[in-house]
Structure formats: structure tokens, C-alpha cells
Length: 117
Image (tube, rainbow, N blue to C red; front, side, top):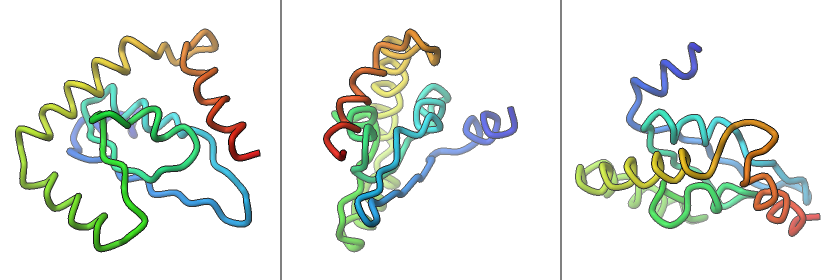
């Protein structure tokens, strides 16, 4: 409950991740929770993250730190873009996730994880 309350108060949820020695993260549920709470997700292109926040539902960071910083600064200065991302993310999340074992995205994320194994 504490984390959900913090998401409600925050504008962004930043979750960088990277693959080390062929290890792979799974999709962090915190991303879906943030989307549901109208918190813009900023993350990296790992595992199922692009499937969740791609297509204008969040900000996928580039590998270049300079480009990532530039993208974050642009997002922070564009209120209309932030509003659009929040609307797309929340709508998509409510339509495509149930946060239980019948979640239709489970197979999408499993497919994404299989690419790394």
C-alpha cells in the first residue's frame, strides 16, 4: 500500500535494468502498478518492458546516457505529452491486465523472456 501511495503522488517511476552475463530480468509488476496509478514509467529495453510501455505508454530509455537524459528532459517539459502517455498507459493497462493468473499478457511476456534464453 505504501508503494502504491507513493506512485499516486509521483509523476514518474524510473526503473532502469540491464542484462549482465546473459542473465535476464522478468517483467517487473511495479511497472504495471505504476501505469494503473497514472505514474509515467521510464525504463530500459529489457524482457517484457517494451511490450508494456512501448507505443507511447511510457518512455523507453536508449543505451546512450546523453540520449536518455535528453528524452527525460523533453518529457519533463511537455505537459501534453505526459498527459497523453498517462491516458494511453492507464487505458491499455486496464484493458490488458488483470494482475492475476488469467492475465492475457502472461503469454506475451513469456514470449519475450524466451527470446533471451
